[in-house]
Image (cartoon, rainbow, N blue to C red; front, side, top):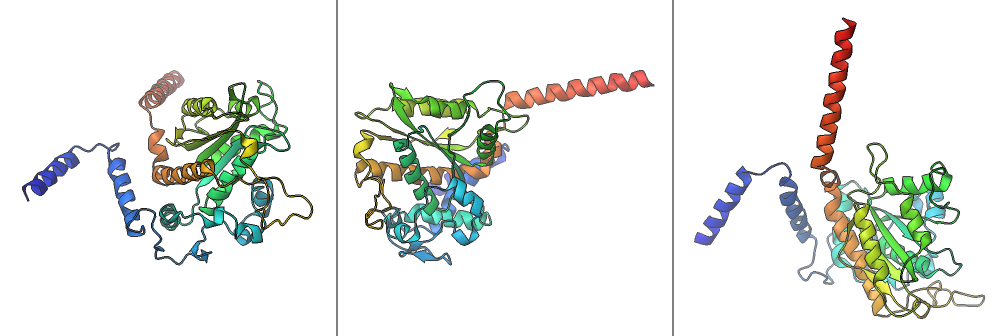
Length: 341
């Protein structure tokens, strides 16, 4: 009893001195607690949440249905989607993701079905690009978790310079970044670091465009593929690059070594497509489990952080800069008015 009274007294004193910037912390804690009503007692148990969301294979069906999807967007930005008979039976459809599914369901209800918007970037133009294949697998997991996923194709994106800002591919990439709530970056490792194809995409995304910041405050998941033994050079560089772009990189990351051994063959004529799960899929090894971990964690972090994006973009230095500009403008207007009278 003494402990409870003391704790209550402490929280009363804390609440008396809350600044506007501390309130979201308590709000975030309340947000996390609100999910407890839809989660099973064991964090990833098998209990099905109370829901009117339709089920697929006994699990919540949260993905964007074809009937409600924009046909142009689906065709251009969702090349990872599989035929329905494949998608209904592949390994992604069988994943146990009860906790994050409950969080997504609650978030969709609370936001009037404002889905998490995810931009996925990869770093190779090869016909059988393993970074693209891994990006597609990440996208399928996110799609199953109800995200609006859009994969950018870097083909024909010009090399960064100071003259091609109006190039259609540059404008497309920038608009997608501004649209997004979070990014997923997948790069091959070449000569011990990320590729030029990948870095070129980031170089075309500005830190700011007027008052708009295309990346600030958004979440980020990172992964790499390697042709040789496991390395973390590229994910380390991606993490540093994400910090520079003012993204919040999740703690987890994925590094897939000897990528040519990690994916199944592409489907050829006569292949049982359903049995092959569409072909070019991640094999059921530990690296695949880590990819699932990363996508699950990415969605959880984005759900918790998305309501506070504007708070994270509020900086003392920028407020000071705005105030100085406003004072200077007011002084100039005052002088102009004085001169006119």
